[in-house]
Image 1: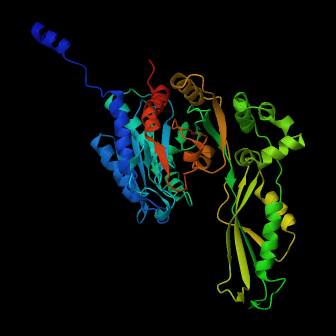
Image 2: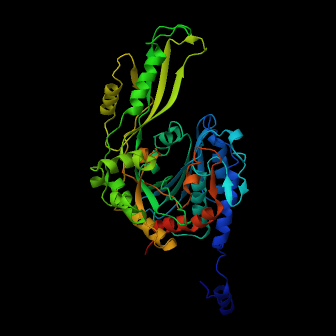
Image 3: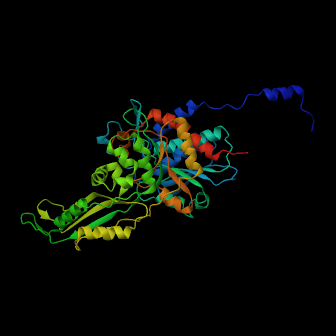
Length: 464
């Protein structure tokens, strides 16, 4: 090999380092991509997630990030993108679902698929649940790719279909026909969850990491009776019997229980509480022995959902004409069970509450046992450390999600799964998920870009 001439050597030394986008450009990218993504209508049913998968793939192709689409049913698809690492450690999955629940446009002040911005708020179905987090994940892997982040583990970007209905997308992705061989070996899984509420003072009250979740145990009540003319009432008609059963269900008080993850959540909030509630939160088990405290916590919608199995009467069907007493009636209950609960024992409990053999109770769909992940992990510590750096003095705590996510499917593989987002919202904004005028703050979208990237880069950066 000939020696490099001195002039050439000097010129090589003088070459500038590869250009790195300033952090602000990634913030703007996140806002722009979210607004565009919210315009992709993936209402489920029918879903049409293939449109969203193609939206993602076009961006990923442009960035040189390998990805693949699995269209497992007409218009229904998952997407998997991969940033390869040295595989010294097991992979991280950044997971988001592409489908959204229906939106009644007549009840919205802004079109639900517009991605419109008004007074610092970005409107659109999926802004809270969970297209905003999908974009944070996307921008994170784009930044890692552009900046040449050396990884000691693979990072998967997984976008799924049908999370809002039957988990068909995640079930497919984790099946042998999907990407089970790769995804089933991951060490960590980050998905939606981790509600972070802004208080009246405009500051975050806490950052929650969802380490556990309740299990949906949906039930259908059915009964039948003699039909007849509405002018001659039947005391024991099918609908009257159903109404009596539903009233017994409504009046039933399920037992209050304290799980460790919930106990920590309440204890971590105690310092922000006033009056007797501060004492209750410091020692939740003791509080439940006090009838006054127990009643107050039972009647608190948010607290109660974390302390007991809940029942919501959501659907009632009967009759077709005002002057006809229907011969059959049915209702549906949205039951959410705490981790560790026996669904068959709960079913027996409810049958005893209704106490009417002519009212049949049967589960709807497949029950998946609720589960949880430990907190003594590298990822949990990194999230804590990152949040404290970006938001000094704000507590980081565990949460149990009252709903359900795809975490319930990945944890049995031995994967630690957390619901985590850096996004902040007021209680009112949180309530817009699945509601009217769903929206997310533009400023929190921007600020969350660096937080999320710091968590992922810290966890996955190659260490000499």
